[in-house]
Structure formats: structure tokens, C-alpha cells
Image 1: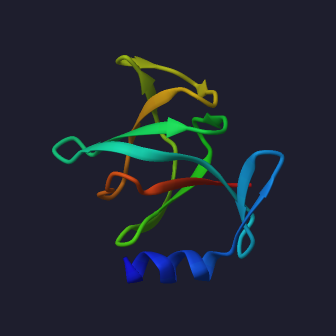
Image 2: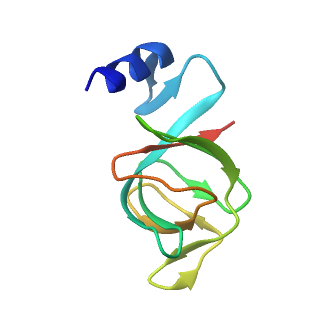
Length: 107
């Protein structure tokens, strides 16, 4: 738990209009990972803000920290170009992620 506290102290969260922002970079929290399928490299992300194919995302957690572009997104095995807050989507990730890792979108 100490590593997690250091992680969040370094990032300085603040909230505006219900969306969570990080002050060090121009990014906004768009969701968190609820499951990761390691064999196929796909994460289930519960969205708290809109996300679209082509958006640049950051995945951060106690042992996770990487950036990538959203190349494909699916709901119930159907590809979609964008998703809204409240939806759970499948994202193909470039690296391994863990449950409860947070997904941010670069603005």
C-alpha cells in the first residue's frame, strides 16, 4: 500500500465538473480496468468519460505505467468507434495491465 500512496501523492489529483484530472500532465481519467485477459492482451475498462479509437491513453497503477493509442475497442465482440461513460469496453493493450489500474486520456 505504501507504493500506491507514493504514486498518488506524486500525481496530485483534482476534480472539475465530475471529471478527474492530473495536474502534472494534460490528462483526464476515463476509467479503470476491471479485468485483464493476459493470453490475448485485452483489458475490460469501465468508462467514467468518453473514449474513442485514435485517442492516446495512459495506463497507470502501482506496477503499471505505459502509454499507447487506442487501436480497437469492442463491446460484446462488436467493434465500435467510440464509447460513452458508464459502458464497459474491451481494449487491446500493448503491455500487461492489472485490475484496478487507472486509464487516462491525453488531451
